[in-house]
Length: 609
Ligand code: AGP
Image (tube, rainbow, N blue to C red; front, side, top):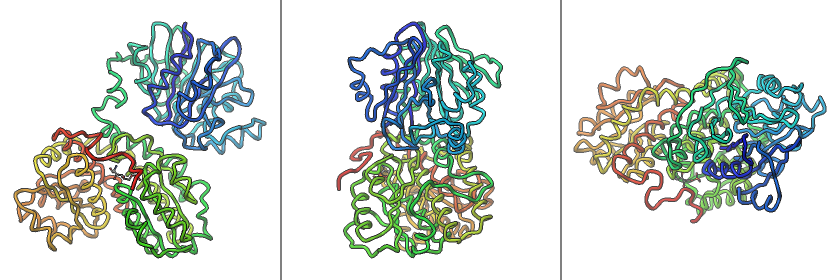
């Protein structure tokens, strides 16, 4: 996710801007930049790479000014490059803006502004903001920002300044975070608290829809043009706690971030009530799709489990055979595929060696390669013919969580896109699913709001055991695979996942002594079968932990503990059912005193064979 820093006060702005960006490095970025106002003009310096590169590029230069903004960019639109880096300015260079988020209607706004003669130098969505403000500017920056803000759709935390109306920074916020810091020698903006530590003793978190006008004397916050009283908090966090957003571990922060990550993944790609999925300029068009007679999905670990969801939903949606392959096996198996095969490669890091090698093997055999990844311009992104970015933001914990749910979401979007291309689903069907996808982020949030205590209690019981079994059928089985990996890799409990119908073919021999059996049970058409499988385990003294939709009338009669989830379309269940499994793994790991964010023997990205 991008990082923002801003300062206006008595001191030179540059030192805070650079140090503030450094404190935001943990958010992940691929370029950095600053803009400082001094004596009637704005100086801008931008550089791809690390902040140290930016510092090197301005070494020896005198960049004076007591008012400035700065940015670290995590690319979502436009490759990492100097011209795509922030701050962005309007055509005349009088207004500078830094932005974190996604402007969904930027193409529409860019077209309007180009028709009015504004010129653009980048591929970013952000560049529409300074030009829109310039188009509204009649001498008062606040009025221009408010008018421009009304035209923006999507998520944004943005700070802007104008050399024609100096002496103030203006910040706006919708969904992406923006924080105000109150200092003795001036005032500060930042995307996150770490940047403010050591500079301020109190802060305000700007709320959605609010506009902050910051001068060196103070800050006024407006809602719909009227000033409101800010909520000021004392800044007591240390840096480590602040980088984790106040959570004890990055993993919990990243689990809780999932509603935001899912919204970012959907942003600009679907519209409520519409049947169209916009995945940008994919080479996978109707003509190519017509020729595809097989889909192969290749990945490792959690990404492999996301592919497994794809196998079940694509065969339902497209009626095309789908094979799911572990990359380290696929790459040496001399697999049968050709130009009629679509190979989908999934990787959070985009650098996993086995997955990259599997991609090369499929490409060599003539297959069309589509990558789903979280890292812009990663090796896998560069080698694929098409790329869909998951936009999960930086994931620091070794155990993937928001990477998985955004991978699955991207897989759903691709499925609807392909179904539309092949004419396999009628528009009403696609629209129904899209409308439910729109609701998923809030349903994930509802799990956190309503079920956290239930899930934590389940985890603390499971943490007392050395073995655990995850069972499910169809899409519930696929999520059980991911649940077992999560528990295994961070709590060190020996966890396995089984197709529930498979229990009686051997595993039942291990169901004794209240061993935990985590049963994912949402697929309506298989519920009776699933209930009887659960009973098989329960009668053999298994301790049943069930994950089911709220309103399920039967599950509580066969389970010792139940986590009820908001109802959704059975096809979309994995995005919700995985959440309690992630939290069970997390709380079990905490109770067992394991190293949650950096589990033994594991690396975040396996770039070797
Ligand atoms: C999952 O929690 C692990 N971090 C691991 O299995 C991971 O999913 C796997 O190494 C693949 O990584 P990638 O998505 O970056 O390719």
